[in-house]
Every structure is written in structure tokens, then in C-alpha cells.
Image 1 (spheres, helix red, strand yellow):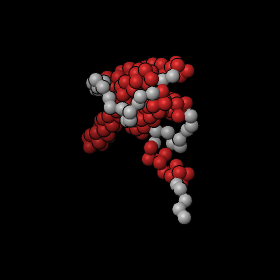
Image 2 (cartoon, helix red, strand yellow):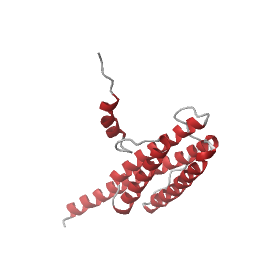
Image 3 (cartoon, rainbow, N blue to C red):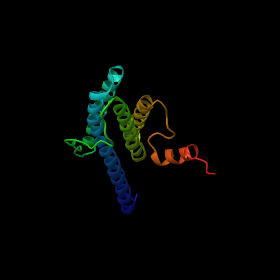
Image 4 (cartoon, rainbow, N blue to C red):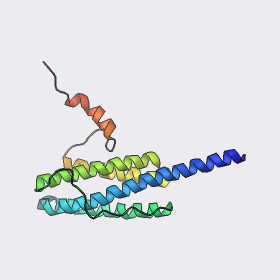
Length: 168
């Protein structure tokens, strides 16, 4: 391999690692937000679904810790959790808590889809598992599925004809 080819290969590896690290940090940030959000959900959710909320909270904490280790393995410093997060809408009762839980999972699925695109090997598998788990939890909270979970740009296009209203 010539010196130029070696330099290009090294640069490609570095770019891949940088993209992967960026995607890992984004997923870590989303997990921090989900952990915070599930604190709100747990405080307002009805008794019947409280154990489900607790299981989701624990799953997001475990994923958060796993992602922090992966960031460190790539030589990065894991992004810290914020002191607080703005909720996407007011949440004041169990109906709002259910909606928030579904929204949290949809957002997490989105960043995991980005990780799947950016990563290779074991980290790609981790991203795919995170995407699948978030999509399944979103279905449970929402009561139905969406096409292409984690890919908002595809889901919007796929659902457009179904939600269009005819004009006279």
C-alpha cells in the first residue's frame, strides 16, 4: 500500500470513528432525556402501568450506562446529563404521561436509527437493539405502531396518504 493510500485509509477510519462517536453521544443524550422524562411519567402514570414505566426507566438507565462505556472506549468523554429537560408538551395527568412515554420512545428510536447508520459491528447491533426496544415500548404506550419506527422522514411519507382528507 502506498503512503497516499495508507493516509486515505487512516482518514476514512478516523471519519468513521468520529461519526460513530457523534452518534453514540447523541444516543447517550437521548437516554439522559428519557431517564429524566420517565421520572415525570412515573410520577403521573396510573397505578396499572406504573411497573411498566419503572421497567422502561430501568432499561433507559442501563442503555445510558452502556453508551457511556462505548463513548469512553472510542476515546470520548460521555456527554453529561442536563439538570433538567424541557418537555415537548405540558404533562399534568396520566393521559399526558402516557403520551409523553410514547414521545420519549419515538425520540430515542430516532437517535438509535442514526447510530445504526453510523456504526459498524457490535455498536451497530447495539443501535439496532436500542431502536427495536424503543419501538416496541412506543407501541405499548401508544397502543399502535407506526411505519418505519425511528425514521421520521420515512414515517411521515408513508403515512401521508392514509391521513390525507379528500377535498370536495
